[in-house]
Amino acid sequence: MSFLKELTKRFTGEYGIRPLLKEHPKEVTDELILWTSDENFHVRRLASEGVRIRLPWSQKLFVALDEFERYTMHRKNPSI
View 1 (cartoon, rainbow, N blue to C red):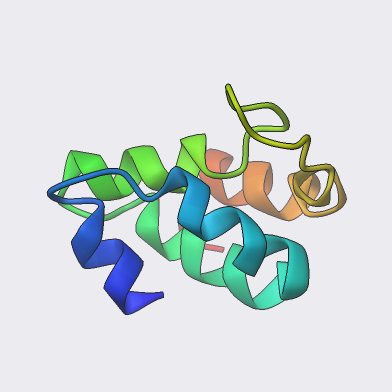
View 2 (view 1 turned 60 degrees about the horizontal axis):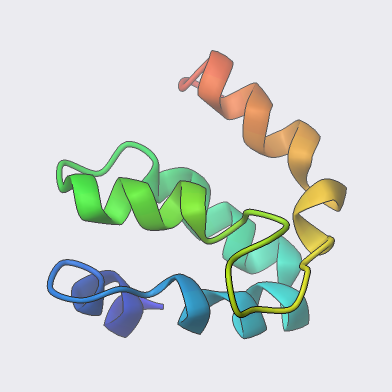
């Protein structure tokens, strides 16, 4: 995860985060929630774009729907 965080500051990590999200949805979502407040806009973008159901040239990822409530609750109230 830390490698993808650094990588996305220079390239893109959306495709790299998806297999991790699929295999470890809760743990990865916990980290992505933290990344939504990162000072680097590329990291914040990875936190949002990486959980999209559809990305061009990628399989659909429905895991994000399972964690959607927790993810959006944090966006509404970052103190959670």
